[in-house]
Length: 323
Image 1 (tube, rainbow, N blue to C red):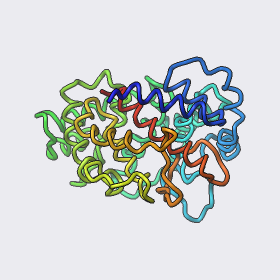
Image 2: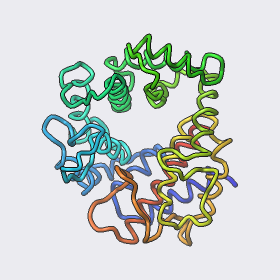
Image 3: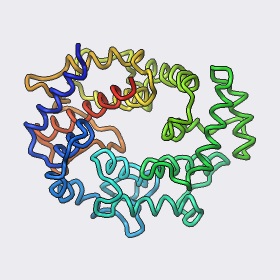
Image 4: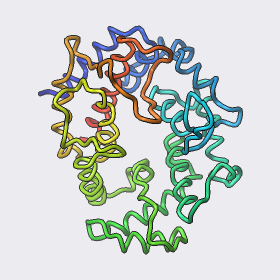
């Protein structure tokens, strides 16, 4: 199978079939690196962008940072979910000021100007949240100097944890106690996405060790949900199919992920419908905090198929870039 050719065929097929300007803009910009100016203004005025703009608070947030407030009915359960959607659909810092305002909010946190939004239930809570804030801010503004300290602290911790080529809990604990000032045996989960945001600082040997440790675990056990890449369903159209994608995407962030995802890619390419696209089916259930949408309002067969196809194509695009 020529994956690149099949990917291009599916992406072009979706581009020709859909009328959604946000999807057309994303396909041109992120999948084909092609001029997309003719769809840019329509994209900025699309319902999904208007919703993000309308729901954002004046200081740049969309409610709680990363912990859902169940007493509050909101379109976006957390600020991180809203930022994920902004980036997923292709918004940049220049687009209507949405992400620029969000970046200001995150940078205030990085500079201790807005710490009241952070919870502090145990000694791991603040370092954990601040690393996630830095990850998000770094994705919005690469090489952000406000992220330097946290980035290199976590790179040091992870390098210590994998010093021998395999994960060592005692080394991880010693490094976290040294850098974060913690004392408990329970540790902050290693912030992999943060150090991969500046991949040039991660040695091939370290990334290979991370792939085999974290990728294999996600392959065999799933990531967040138990749906795992080694236990694919018989049919793509089942009500939990979307729950496999956090695992697919988690493994796919590493270079060399083909060894764990080759079967997944084959399964996805064999699951296209008669139009050469993908459709979860009418019984699909969305996981909590889901952000992979390109439109608002009532779900129809057409919008569901468009969102599903974009999710598959986005995964495949990252997978091919990390081969």
